[in-house]
Image (cartoon, rainbow, N blue to C red; front, side, top):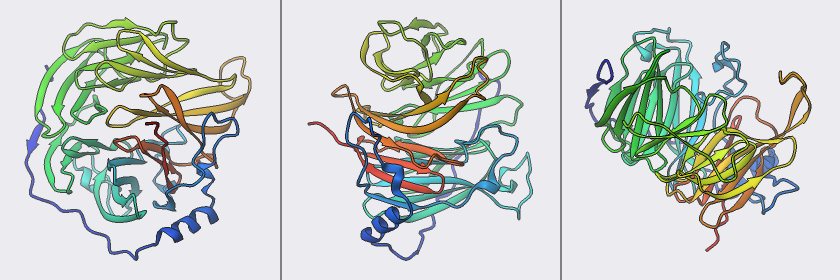
Length: 397
C-alpha cells in the first residue's frame, strides 16, 4: 500500500480565460505556413505512402523557450517543457513551460516557482486559439493528458482534472518526498496510473480518469522506473536489457515474458494500445497481442531506428512513431561518431495493418518536438520548436 494517501480537494469552478486575439483566415494561415517553411510536412522520398503535402494549417504558436531550458538536463529536447494534446477531434491543446522571473522558486509552493505551465486551446478547423490558462510548475514534471473526464494537468506536485468545457473538477497534491512520481494515462483516458518509486520498490495507485477517485493500490519490488506504459488493467514494460517485454495485470504482482513470433530484435517503449494489444518501437515497428502473437511488422534500413515516442489515438485505431535516420559509426558505442540526418513521423492504421502516412520533420527540431493523434486518428499535430502543423491522416474504408 502507498505510505501516504493523496489529499483531495474539490475546488471552486474556474473558467479558462478566453483570448480575444484578432482572427486569422484559413487562407492567411496557409500563406504563413508556406512562407515560413512548412517543410515540417514534406514527405520522405522513400515514403511508402503520400506525405502531408497540404497541411490543414501551420503557424507559430509558442514562444522561444530557450531561456526556460533546464540547464541541468543533458537532453536537447525536453518533453516536459512543451507538447501537443488533442482534447477532442475538433480541439488541440498546446502547452509550454515559460520562465517567469518575477516569482522565486519555492519547494513548498509550486505557484511561486519561476516556471509557469501555459496551455492554449486551438480550433482545428480555424487554426486559431480560443482559450488559455497557466499554472505554477517546475522545470520538469509538466504534462497534459486527455481523459474521459476532460483533461488531466500535471504542474509539479499538483494534478488537476478539468472537464471538456474547461471547468476545474478536482485537484490532488502529491506528497512532498525524495521519491519520484511517474504518471501514465491509458490510451482511452479511462485510467490513470501513479507510480511512486524509490531505490527499492514501486507503490502504485490507480485512479479513475473521469473522477480521480482511487480504484486500486499496491506495492511491489523492484521499482519500475522507465520504458513502460499502462492500459485500463495492465502494465507493459521493457526488461533491463531491452530484450523482452514484461506484462502484468494491476495488483497481481506477477510478470510474464511476452515476445513477438518471430522473436523481437530489441525492445524500445512497449506501448499498450488496448488491454489486449500493444506496439513495440525499436529497430522495427511491431504490432502484437499481449499473448505474444505478432499481428503486423514494419522493418527499416541500416542506420534507421525508432525513437521512444509513441502516440496512440484514443479509439486504438492509429499509432504514430518517430523514425530517426543516422549516418556514421561508433565502435565504442559512445554516440559521438553518429550524426542524426533526418527524422520522420510514421503513422500506422492498425485496422488495415499498414503505414498510412510518412512525414519528414524538417528542419530538425532544436528545442521542442512533440506530436499527437486526434481521438479518431484522422488528424496528426506536430510541434517543431515554435511551430505547430496539423495534417490529415488518410483512412481506408
